[in-house]
Length: 326
Length: 270
Image (cartoon, rainbow over all chains, first blue to last red; front, side):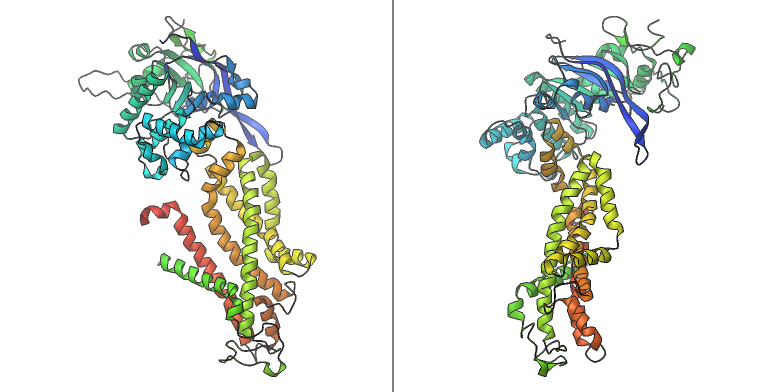
């Protein structure tokens, strides 16, 4: 990928949400293990896709990376600073480097603010520029995302879903961030609009040298935009590799099942469907051993006892499965 | 139909406000001057609503009573809005304080409203200002609850997360993002608080802890007239109607506002 090393390095990141019971004691009766000890790196200028089904912890991971949530433990290295362990004042300054694009373009824009107020807010918060300079910057940003500068005076409800998503992107770009977490940025849009937004994001990446963490449950979209892909299951990364390697020769049984569920617009093509049975186990009580063992068609006795580590099986293809790494 | 109810509510309330503001011009007599010769006059062209046991013109006293009731209502609304919004905003936003603050509010709400207001007004002494203080203390928890409830919803909106992500301060997030989007239920609640305050002021005045006589208050006019209700029903009837109309107007107004401000209803009417 693009030279220049890693922009983001995540090490042993853990997020457990405590479950409290009781009125006076508020004692902790358990934990939702949303993200459980994951490590990965994102190279400068690349797009790392993060896929998985609902509740697997992919959104939580994204929110941890931009510190909307406080990690339970682990490190989030960005440009040499550990976002997980820096004083609040420094974190505030560092927030300029990391931004987020949300899934729902209707909930992500304050309905009582004008587009200008929304896009300029990051500048106001960080005390950048005079009023006139900020106005100029907003116009510039709106043009960059394909809107007209005179849209600045309007309110969010006057825009369509795709246009609103563009406003959200303009806001995320306002501070010239290096790293953007895209949390299902096109899932709420019409299919015809999805491609426009994806292409806009790719163009912006090239133009501004952005690095993306692209969270999605849509494997086709991820294939289109990502350079590498990480697959999550129940708070763990089970496979992490190059896009082509993942889509051509998935190694983990879960990845294989996921990919076999993609619809292919070719009735001639033979498909081997791997159908998973049962539900995802509760993240409050994940199964012992490999987390996938309850639904894995290939599970062996050791899968129920020993948790498989994420191991490089050659050319950066990482898999967490006993059957692959034997 | 809804629309018509809202407009009539607005008209009734506006009528009361006009009476309150222009009481000096609308009054036909002095509200306090005793005129023994004119005691117990039934309604006539000279005394529209009749006269009381001191010969005072009931119409004039009702008009001045509107001034008192409406001012007390506005003052209570203003105070409860400020106190309730502050408490609700803080309680809903800083979840650590929530349990403590809301249990205190619950304790206040557990008291029967009128009894608590009566106790407070009695302790503070009879004056319009103390009534405002007592009623504000009593109705603040209701407003705080309503504000807190909508803050809890709004604080989870993505635009609030986005503001956190750019490093906005808590104060900025509360004032710029959460408060403006939590206002609709507050506005509705405040019209009801206004109505409750008008009734409560009348009740407290009726019970004798309101502004001391001869200040004309709807509650005290009724209290003075109740001994003569068989012979001179007009003394109690007209201030009673005034109270009923004010409260009805405010309730219609509140219901109408709720419909207007509810975005789900808005979709149809657009």
